[in-house]
Length: 374
Ligand SMILES: [Mg+2]
Image (cartoon, rainbow, N blue to C red; front, side, top):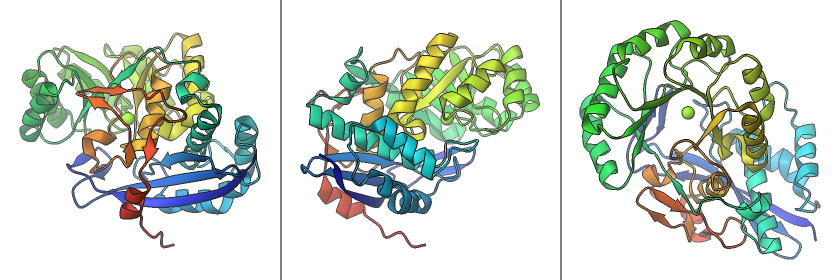
């Protein structure tokens, strides 16, 4: 049995509410999210699904680059291969698009990695979590994303609390006074809620010091994620030495190669895992290295729809994360494009059917499909 056919499907999925971070819009009504679905078909007719969720203001890949990377380069790697040969296929992908300093088009490679795991799970008749060692949790607790201004976030935070969310990931923008107001408002609105701050690179080690002084009395802050730019490992290291609040790293960490550098520089307390940026296989490698280094992990996402979201459920179900995962497609997207996903309040159930364990609704793909113009 070999991989016979690969289809690359670019999509735009509308946002039901605005989501803004320090680097710009993730999406909003009228500003749909861009996704690329990957369909991998074997000679036996079995189908594996992958998803990439490019967001160029966050990381350099675009919908167009993911499309051309998959279509022109990585499809060629897949055709004729045994889908069980994930190690060999990753080596071939890294040969054709070199992981020079970066992981080399990691979002596009993640779509391939997810599709292969879906396919292998279906061929073996087991859910992906069993391929990874088996789930230790039946569901994944989710955090609620909070982004906006002090006068708009309170009502929404209350609504999410009523829906069962207990951890609130607040997007801060890099202005000490405005961010302090946001944090204070959230803390006063939901005094028992855990607060996970994400600056998305908006601070320097100096300006973060000012924010830390300003928020010293606010309890319940579990971490500050990615305070400084992606390349600023020295800044992270200075902050980790001084900050009373643990520092989490996201945009500075895509692979276990990045993690060993961060560990050697004492530049993090917590790391943020995302299947969207590392795929399934590299996420497991990062997790193993984190365990050896005594580092705690958090789970996050890129507002992926059903395929990427469910891949994250399988991965996170095998781990002990220190906070509810910020996997946020269901919070923002008009449609998740799959059947069989079960979400109760803030809990997303881990599927037990083969592969991803959800069924891609191909009629929906046609509804949201777009032409890539280059
Ligand atoms: Mg982040």
